[in-house]
Amino acid sequence: MFRVLLVCMGNICRSPTAEGVLRARLAAAGLADRVEVDSAGTHDYHVGAPPDHRSQAHAARRGVDLSALRARQICAADFERFDLLLAMDHDNLALLEEACPGPHLRAKLGLLMRFGPQAGSEVVPDPYYGGPAGFDHVLDLVEAASDGLVKHLSKTLTCA
Image (cartoon, rainbow, N blue to C red; front, side):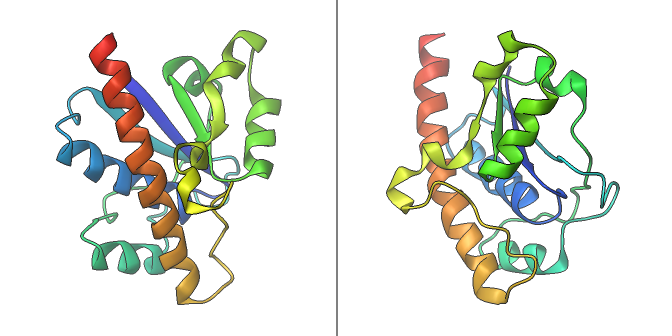
């Protein structure tokens, strides 16, 4: 089983959206039974809370159900458990790097958007304080990155 953790600040907008989209894309590609996906926040602001209602509504319009997800904060064990820990932006990547319990684990860290360079953004911006267009933009970006990540995992898991 390959494990992917998607990380943003509070785990109520970007990372649960990315979790839901990636799960759907993996299922469509027939990889759901070979790849575990989870999400977490670098901060404990919303632990136990469902995704932001705007994230849920925008994802639902694209056929992705986020309603069962609950926010959690990243923990030290995540660095060992997951094969990839992908941050939504540079700030959260820096926080992952600071929290990383050993230099041998740093190779697992990166930005989600490295798998979606065609989308034209290195990061997934936080839509929390913006309007509805920001949530659609997040979906556009995570869909592009998820497609690239599924393609990468398909090759990786075939060769394994």
